[in-house]
Amino acid sequence: MLHWAIDKVTNKFNQKYKGTLVIQQAAFSGLSNVSLQNICLSAPTGDTLLTIASLEAHIKILPLVLAHIRLDEVFIDSTAIKIFKTAKKDNISFMLKSKKNEDNDTLETTKGNIDIGNLTYNLVKTIFDVIPQKVQVLSTTMALQRDTAYFKTSIDTLRFIDGQFHCNINTIESKGKSHYILNGQVDKSERTLSFSLYPATLKDSSSFPILKSFLNLSISFDTLLVALNQTDYDSDVLSLEGKALIKKGAINHWRISPKNIELAYAEINYKFNIGVSELSLDSSTSIQLNKMLIKPFVHYQHSPKKTLGVDFKIPLMPSQAFFKSLPIGLFTNIEGIQTKGDLGFNMHFFMDTKLPDSVQFVCSMPKNKFKIISYGEARLNKLNEEFLYTAFERGHAVRSFLVGPSNPNYTPIASISPYLQNALMTSEDGNFYWHNGFNENAFRKSIAENYKKGRFARGGSTISMQLVKNVFLTRNKTIARKVEEALIVWLIESNNIASKERMYEVYLNIIEWGPGIYGAGEASAYYFNKKAADLTLAESIYLAMIVPRPKWFKYNFDESGKLKPHVADFYRIIANHLLRKEIITEEQKLALLPDINLTGPAKELILIKDSLAVDSLEIAPIELLLERE
Figure 1 (cartoon, helix red, strand yellow):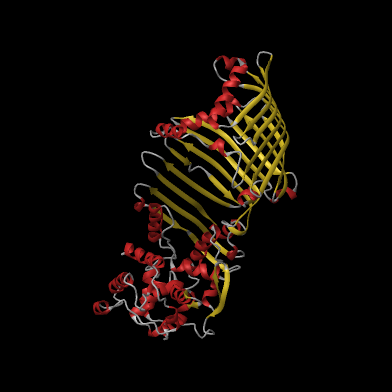
Figure 2 (spheres, helix red, strand yellow):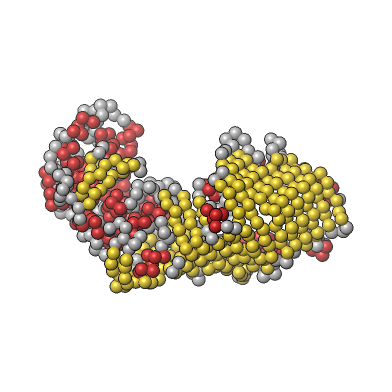
């Protein structure tokens, strides 16, 4: 019967996956002990995926009578797992492929409403039920290789006895070596578990294994602890409660930040609720980052409609403790800031995917007697003074110049044509003088538009955010930069570090307006051979139009040097806005023509031939303005 069962399993595996599963020897030792020798699992190519020299298991008799397999003791010796993947060959993908008809069957069964809570509860219950009382695993190795990235880990002995387990994990990878120690315990009856993972020596804490080689992600820590303290299933809702903490943690990835982000202490006390068709991170959940308390709430509903709600709150706390608790390396420009008073943070987000245009987003930082005593590394108040500005292209510095009277091209806002000021503001951020650095309505529209199109099609940056990005931050497109950008904008706007007029004046003097052209003074001379104060309405609207893609300005002209037809839409939209704001008259609007004459050096770069491929790029900003109108 044992050989019949093994043959049935191996044949089914071989037929389904076209690979090979071989168990060379199998025998009973007594009534309930099963011994399997020389187990080998191979890919269809013949490459070995798994080998086990010996597996012995003691099966509980009573559950077996009820058709439940429950193991009392398990002994495994000499296990080797080897996974590799190159551009032409691998030994794992055959296990991940499934037949189309099987996929279709699965889809049919999932069209109805899935009881996620019950499914998860049964999975958790099964996992705890099948855990043996005693496990001993000797000499286990696992090797992963993808092209030039390599990772190998070995466990001399893993012992699990009466709920307690322990093992030493040694790793060798293309990025270095490490040695970690894993300790933990499991309570099968209460369905709880906990484990701690920590480096054996200080040297081993440089980077957690495998992540660096395969994801270029570096994570290190002094101690990692994870615990599931309670499992409860009631009224079709599964609740999982526990905690996780990390001490002296650090993370590094180029998408997150160019520098290490360090955190001395972080702890989360969590409660997950899993219902019939919904998941939530309960409002009783709390996160501690150093001295900062965070209260998160997340709710996702799968049916009858998909919705996502997120609330994130940091109650008022001493502002200096607030900044000290932020991870080192995440906000480099405000490191060293000195403040007094209290500071907090609130964020609310909700989206019904069937009604994306009704998305809710509210964000605020409440304060009480908050005051900045010292600005820290970035000198946020430098906007009020003459300062050296460096322009970047693709992460490289291309030009530095003074923003102030010492620069002959610097143009005070009073000497910049009101037409240009208002046309550019209408195009980029029509509510600049009335918001506090963030245009939540524009941001909500951005979220809805990006969701509907399934890609990043529209941003929600304000002039304040663009200014901060250019003056204070690197051009690295990272998560850390966007978060730091938002915080600096709030500090400047909410604490009146610089006036709106001064911020707009600096913005008008630093933004790129062409190849190596920065600021309104240089732009007016480059395109029209005149001062910024003398720009006409048509010229001002043209300069406002090219700001999103200044180096592509030449593609707005046809082979005769006239503006292309699509530009007329931009002129009409801007003119309508200026008329409503009473900046221009009805007569000026009627007299406005989408026609200009380049008289400066830019005229030499106008292309002779048309380019439809590039022309389509220039239509994008006009489409956004049409939506706004």
